[in-house]
Length: 185
Image (cartoon, rainbow, N blue to C red; front, side, top):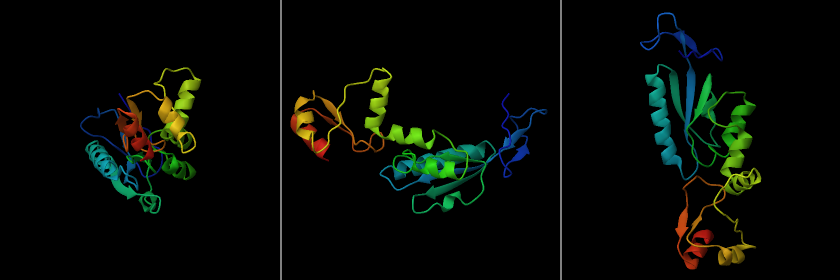
C-alpha cells in the first residue's frame, strides 16, 4: 500500500478504483516541464507529453508547460511538484534545478549541483576515476592539447561534447582523420 502525503495546498485527497475503501491517496498538482532551448527540444516535448498523459491517467491534476531560460511563466501556477522532462541544456545541466531550489519547489531528479556535474562529462569522469570505479579511458581535448590527444589516443574512439546531451553530436571515429573532424565539430 502506497500513500502520498500532502505537500502543499494545491493537492486534494481522493479515492479511485486502485484505492482501497480505507486508503486515501493524494491527488497532486503537478507541472510537467518540457521543451527547452537545446538540440533535444523535440525529444523533450514528446517526453513531456507522455509523462503528462500518465499523470492524468493516475488521477493527478497535471499541466504541461513548454519552458526555457527566457520564459519561466510555466512555473507561475502553484504546484505540489514539478516533473522535469527537459533534456540537455537547461533541463539536465542544473539550471532549471537551481531555479526550482531557489523557489523551494519540489521536483524530480537530482539537485542543481549534481545535475551540473553529471552534465559535464569531463567532471563526471574525474569524479568516477577519483572513487575508483572502472570506466573506459578518456582524454579531454581542447585547442591547446588537441594534436597531442589525437595522436596519442587509440582507435576506434567515441567523441562527445563535454556539456551536451548524452548522444547529441556524438561520433565514432575509426581513423585519425575522422577523430580530428569529429573533435573539431
